[in-house]
Length: 358
Image (cartoon, rainbow, N blue to C red):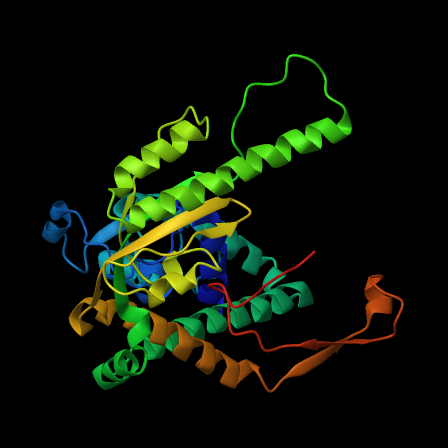
């Protein structure tokens, strides 16, 4: 039990030392690893190869071995070997870097000395300590279970990936598009004198109508074969825009790559120009240049990540879903009712499986 409590302390003390980058969504072409690669060991420095497993990496003079009558004595020595230290480091987190391991080694003697003295004073027998140990135990078990479930969810059969690809062809169809964007309102210099409210409304409506007419005219010219790049530049110039126009070539994208309401574009035939699509942002004219299917090999990693997420959700729901709790809001001062029902099951969880809300 003492080791468990020590690990909990080390988790908190070393949290600041883990220099991790800000989390970003997984790339569609990269198979995700469970628990942000926390289970992937970091190779030791080359110099570590010369240190035997039973060789000391830490010597604490004056600290008696565990089980001695007194925690400290002038002639006592406590030795921590490489094997013992690496077991501790792996228990905390396999991916600890050499720098963080060195920080752990600096912290470890103080924890040993202070915890031995606390035991000598009987602090480990107090109810507070026992309750804290039990809570830490639940945290660590929850963390280990979460990692195990993530590993299980990541074992997606290749056949499941192939089946998903066959059943969702539209998800992997790529469209090569060109687009002309026409601003919704023409940018004009401010009037020389203040206008009445009605005159200002008429002015704004006229600026909108001009761009609507421009969009229809550009669409007709695009349908006759004029280059989208040139028409895009004209749209910005006619709209009074001072910034550089966007690139008319959009490259390859999928159905989810366009704003809502623009999905009619995907029914175009190759080489066909769309009607004007208008929304709050402006007017758009599309041309479909080509359509092709992404291969299963190229889509495999993306499908794996998707199915892994679904499997993880299902496994967590299976464990947590059947349970509900009732909270006495009157006790906590957070409501007027005597009790409120709270669904315990929540598929998403952090590394400890705990989530606190204010």
